[in-house]
Length: 254
Ligand SMILES: Nc1ncnc2c1ncn2[C@@H]1O[C@H](COP(=O)(O)OP(=O)(O)OP(=O)(O)O)[C@@H](O)[C@H]1O
Ligand SMILES: [Mg+2]
Image 1 (spheres, rainbow, N blue to C red):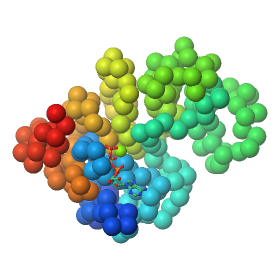
Image 2 (image 1 turned 30 degrees about the horizontal axis):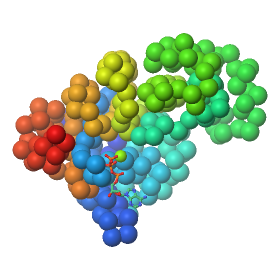
Image 3 (image 1 turned 135 degrees about the horizontal axis):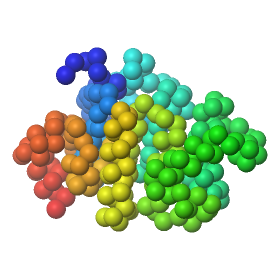
Image 4 (image 1 turned 60 degrees about the vertical axis):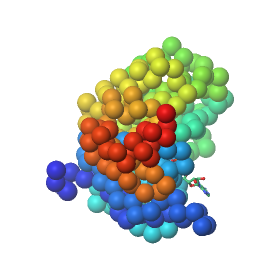
């Protein structure tokens, strides 16, 4: 394991919300091509960490470095343009537009470098991007729902659509905040298979997940957060056997 493989480095990050130390001393190194899971009990700081990485929240101190570029201080759209895409815990979608249109939007935004006002008109005419969006919807098993209004999808389908919205950007780093939240076991398994398929294409992923079945099926490395600190990290086997983890997380969750 050499440092040259590290594509994302969260270096000494602290985040305070008033008196609350939501993140303390966070040092996290994610290697190229790996799936790195962040687990921990409710309120541990997982979403806060993700929001710091994508520039939605500024760290109180410390920095985030992606492929040699310091992200700290950059805007979310600038970080996105550097090749980082994220799936949020609560999907952010255009409810009145069709599934297909929703998936086309990030590709158009990427191509045009910004969100254009005439984009809705453009949506109708872009055959290449439309074909790519259809391909992504096939990948996530949603092609039959492409004409449905996104707002009328089930929670699980919204998450899969949002995954397609990320994949169409062909990011180097994909961040997922509980990608299987609200899904049935069957949909969860479909999503695991999909994420494995993405992994085989070499995409680096950081995944926040409560579902241990998902974590242990996917992760190469796991970092355990509790009360804003990383209390353990290592391979799934190392983390599974760590008594601190069982006490802080696995014990508390069951
Ligand atoms: N914008 C904010 N302002 C103030 N406090 C916040 C803010 N966002 C999060 N917190 C607090 O920071 C702590 C960490 O929250 P965070 O959402 O990162 O946890 P989490 O690990 O993602 O939890 P969950 O598993 O429930 O999603 C919590 O105590 C939360 O209440
Ligand atoms: Mg969260």
